[in-house]
Amino acid sequence: MSKTALRPQVDIRRSGDRSATKIDWLDSKHSFSFGGQYDPANTHHGLLLVNNDDVVRPGMGFDTHPHQDMEIVTWVLQGALVHQDSTGHSGIIYPGLAQRMSAGTGILHSEKNDSWRLDGGDEHQEPVHFVQMWVVPDEAGITPGYEQLEIENDLLSGGLVPVASGMRKHDGASAIRIANKFAALHAARLQPGQTVELPDAPLLHLYVPRGSVTLEGAGELSTGDAVRFSATGGQKITAIEPAEVLVWEMHATVG
Image (cartoon, rainbow, N blue to C red; front, top):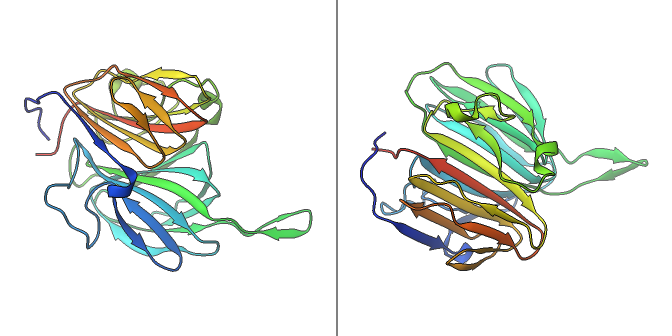
């Protein structure tokens, strides 16, 4: 990780410009190079290497597979996701509950759509929609770990809420902890007319997983749009319609 000098930039990336993986059970949109779709000019922004927006069909999901030396944060927008991993952790992730998996020296895990539930005697199935984000850890070879935490009540305020952080200024906040002291993820649920102010940080990544907002000085952002900020921050975001935003605050970059 490094803290090299940056030039001020607001780089808007539109939803339709993302690469995608679409198969019978998965519709995934990739903000950065992912899997076999490699673009050397689009590997990361700051410490963020992956920002995948996934929709998984009922009863389907990602079978057991490995990860190493990565902090993986999952944020569910609709439905429920079942997590199981080789360290013995398991859980059901749903909207308002944040999940962090530290891959460290190596971990195996699976993520499946948990849509088989009873309601009034009838089975209901729905897709699960979630955003999975990967940031590099401070150091390689840490002990694998898992954490999930309810954030729902804090989001009801309409403000920008720390969801995952390794930064000391968020000690004591209701946020899952990640093993990188230079990064934090914030989330907000906004009603039309509500406004939040972006953190003032060397690097920011703003993603709009649903709804539409206006970004001060740049105009409208719609579902799936993202903005990469360098050496600038503090702009205001105002909801045009009910919206959710995810903001990574970063004080270093990969390199």
